[in-house]
Length: 478
Image 1 (cartoon, helix red, strand yellow):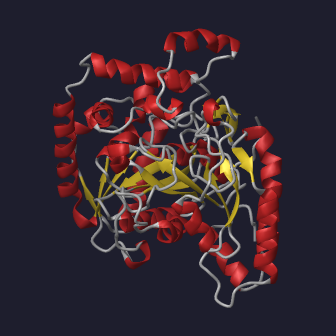
Image 2 (cartoon, rainbow, N blue to C red):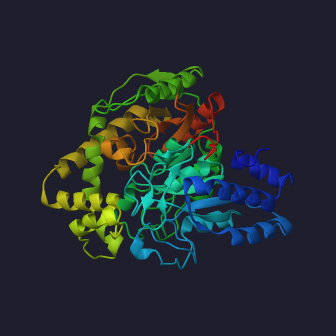
Image 3 (cartoon, helix red, strand yellow):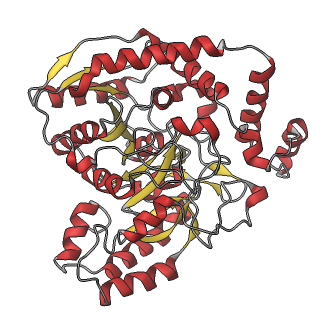
């Protein structure tokens, strides 16, 4: 068995059968992480020694009844608090801050037998699709170090995509799980908001924006995503948006009656031909399984980026700027001037986003109430079209992973993913092989709210029929 490519479900079974030990599995991933991280800079904070102690204990003194993730290594985005570990959110001001408790998600993973190897890199404050900050630096794509791994859960995408972590926990407000998964060749799932509590996630007080946040896994298989989601889901009595939902394992068992709508673009954005072909290849694979293909358009998707921006701007709570400063006002022009000398307090992306946030408050670029109403109408239209047995196939981005900084040339193309946060729909990203340049292609699978089990079941079908997970070899050819 290839421990660095095998899905978690297979590793769990191998540990139960004593074909491998938790210590052996943990050491294999620590070794892999030490091998690849110099090329990708994805691991922000190591936890290797404690992980070894826990793995040794799990090997030598296993409980009589093994928990569902007994001996399985995992990593988490640095935005999740881990007691005694740095919890900076990629913000230089907070680089020495240590978390005083485990976040709910980390606590649940560890209680289920998971062994935490460390935390991964993310962009400053989280609201950008490239992973860079002044605390940990820039993370690169494991398939090509000249390219971005995506963001904001970019470190997790790079670690999982390179085989250094079998499962990673990310968060998603506009594509932050799905874009890294797509760019790095991994599976990823943005749950229906509220399925997984965000207690202990940076920022710890997102306000009304919390209803658009999704907390979920990046992994090597669709079944892994389902397993992890059932471990971390359910109300914790602290996150006001978390609620009880049907367990994934208790949901969809087959694809009987499945209806599929496939869209290559929203009609406004230019999507590369190979990305379009990946959507059609997924549609064909499902057609060959005998599902019903439905032809339908959703013109309001053209406003996806505008709807996302308006919804976040209209949500109550502290502004993004305050999460970077503990409430102080950022001197934007002074910090921009310091960027070339490397003395700015904030990254270029963070300064741009703070500037845009301020601009939206004083200049009526958007008719916020009208766009929020458009989002509500689109949500109703999509849910009616999908019903309980329908999914939408849709590209996760307009291209494969762009080169570092190139995403600034088309900053609105993240509307491929961001609109589904506002619509509060569950989305699974599935790898679809490699393009001619040798970079990962992927497709998004979208369903009705709380119908996460359906997107994951469809993802399993595509995984079986098409390419599935293939790990990158950082440094081998770039």
